[in-house]
Image: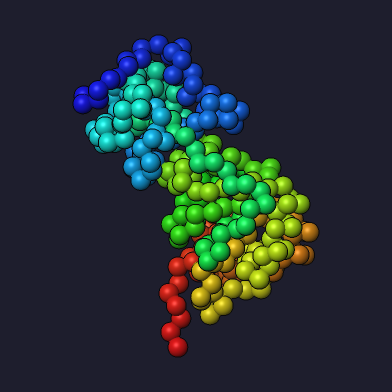
Length: 271
């Protein structure tokens, strides 16, 4: 293999394997300043990052040819590369069927509370999401429609949870996150009320004409089972997606993706 230096790991108790396991938990990620991104899709996204953020590469002896090529492309002089037996990589992996490539990446620093929100850019706000797959999927949708800044109202699942990173197709590695309490978030949103669309089943029905030329809209999505809390619904402008079928509502990932498309990707309206 064309790596200048590669360390072979044959013990499931090796330090690098234990570190990968620790990165599944928020405390472990915060302690070492790294997060875990696994699989070819996340690695392909990582090619767009500053290579210096890739601190360690874990490659299985049974990695797919695609994963081997990606590992070679991501490696650099300051990055440690480890070649693991299948058994060792399986312990490090968070997947049932590992592809054989895992990255330890330095995350972007969180945005500072109190700083001004980006102007002229789309912003997503997610209210106390608890499922890492849902959060990652929404991050992927937001990034696809040009969003680079996301407000997460706590308590929230971490966007650097390995399952969230995977569901985001790696986009969570390059998103700016602002973590706020309920009180902080509501105060901030009230200051930005003129650009807010809060999604709620009891809101005014959205239509295409209303969504044109609002590419900087701040879209607020609620918690999976409960939606937005009452005090938020009473304070912010509410909008809903009109449904024609007999289903009661869309889940938060689908509703958010549709709203992001409507506000952030429609071309300027023709006269």
